[in-house]
Image (cartoon, rainbow, N blue to C red; front, side, top):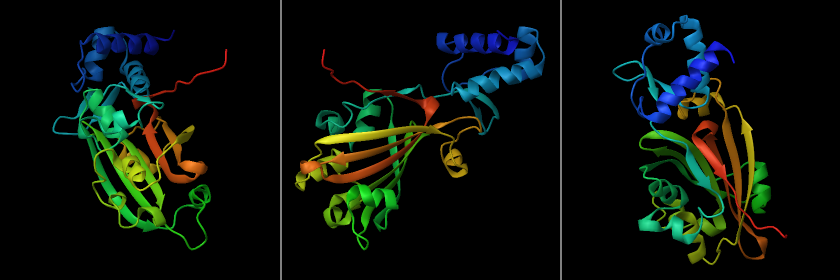
Length: 252
């Protein structure tokens, strides 16, 4: 193991044991170099490794420096997060709201864009839209304790969403899926495609990511009765910030 990896492991251990608490600054490169008796380039490489893993991040506020990531990895349990129990728990506004509150985190969602749009061709095909048909878009930036952790863009056929809370900033308790159920389009099944990739420049900026960090892109399709697709959502999530958990039964 190289020196930088040994030092990265030592700093990681200090983070996990609470020597450096979440949201607090770690010592400067100069101080760490003195502490471990190595050169600053070695420390720089160790910190770059920890930064790529999401354990630490640059801080550009009143005091510049490097801080321990204030948000621990968020476990996204795909098989239960959209159940009515989770998405409506305590008046939650959907799965993201419910799952973060259950983890003791404070969710905040910024609605960037809503209204009728012509969706991307791939989305239009999944939703079965004709050439002249449009979809309701819900384009969101999502935060945990004021830290950006996800971008999400959802599309619902305009023929379903028009004139309903799905087109409003606040979709109500349970979010879009509870409104779809009330409209006669209960979500019976979900399908997700997960891809790991590098973020675009815009995504990197919005999610406050470093150059060598990757994202998960999850395309989720919600299917109602007769396998009708009633919603498509594209999630973009820092890979270091999320743990994706799936569970299913198999024949034995």
